[in-house]
Length: 306
Ligand code: MG
Ligand code: MG
Ligand code: MG
Image (cartoon, rainbow, N blue to C red; front, side):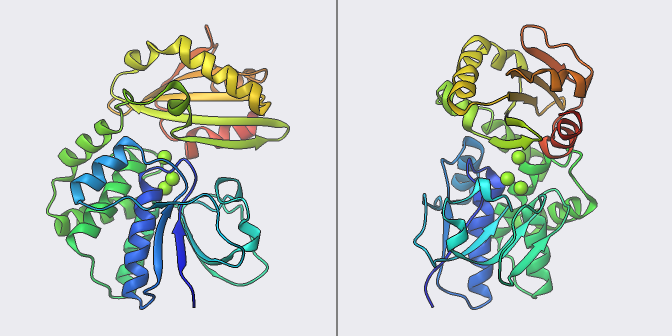
């Protein structure tokens, strides 16, 4: 048997990167030695903070794989977010907490739960298989859960996520609230990125009926700080709209302290956002009070109003 490549989605977030590392540890403990953690894009600042803290190397960057390669997919089940020749590789497992958008012509291990983070499911898998979670792995897992649930404050957070964080923080010997805030803040440092990179850090493509869209998000501790770049962000967004022939680009600047988002929305279907949130976009922008989760508070509402 050849290598098994493990990876999450493009524009990887902390959960995608950490899940590829943790899944490799899990597989090795289950007796599958020949596994390799991979990523489909640049590591963001928040993830970099975690990897440095724990002292773990970033997964290997890949763009595609040879036909027939064996893979494990984590933190997505959306073919559009994966490698181009997905239909020619052999998917052995998927562990995810998103909408199921992928099917195969053959059976596979598929574990999906509507929890806040892939790592909450991985935590259960270790338990179910009586596998030990060491301090490093515990720190990684809890970091991913804190990231995806914005320190357990996001509406995507479930009691299972809270339980996992509490138990993992004991193993990791970490005060998760203090550590988590530092970690989230590290992710708000956009100083080394170009406008194009900022718009791409956490961007996902969607098709809502006939509306080709991108919904991108950045975390911040200060919305006004990011809004200083508004003009450049708008230029960047308009460029992407033109290049990709989009109908809608919704950019969310999410305040992780106060749990609000400011949106900059452009495109000829920007009206969908106005209708969905009953707001008026003034100079292409509006505050969306209480909105922090793309998965729960944006995608379903935009789908309904498209
Ligand atoms: Mg993710
Ligand atoms: Mg996730
Ligand atoms: Mg996210």
